[in-house]
Image (cartoon, rainbow, N blue to C red; front, top):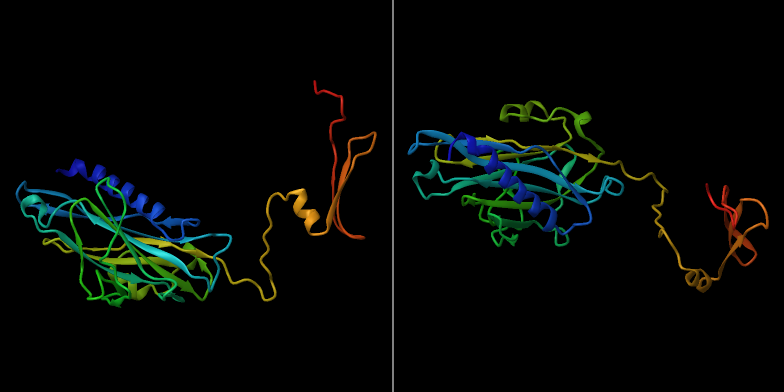
Length: 289
């Protein structure tokens, strides 16, 4: 592997991560919003080259029209390695410690209804449930740590494996993305940039060489809480006539003998519930040029 192979390897890990994120979630009706991945490089002493090492990415899952302040939604961490420690000179896997750096007002919401989920894919294989999954976070260097199991261990990263950890979150305030503040790009900025609306991972890659920190982030947008007294309504796009009749409703369509206007009226007994008028209708027996 050489420098020219970095992009293909990174693209492969990202495509596998997309499969995990899209197909393995317990909230598949919603969509994932992921930030740009962060990647490391590792020196290969056997070939005297620097090659692609590891990759990490983060994002969150929500429905922009439904998810609001106080609702539980999921974030996730995606990470993997392309080679062993020190390149291909050994058969020792790289490892990763994954810390969460949450925005102000955002907290973990782990409970029996909203557990932590873990998955992985080897190469182009099918997604698998990862049994090495924690039931809770541990104390990390930069925030809550997502350990490999409840013992606080680092995640083993065999070359070509993409791992995903999904974790439930809740916010007590509106999140405005970039408008909420600068997202840290270095470890030093974490402490001096407290105002931010981005989900940040601090991934410590143990590669046997430089052991770098990767800091992928995703800007977060969560709508404010619904106003007091507001009610969320939903209605089907179509209703069968038999369903209206069963509920004591009648629909009357009035079509004049001349003209191009028709009116549909919905009544319940003597009470008119609604009326829709459609203008510009074509007359029967006419054709357009």
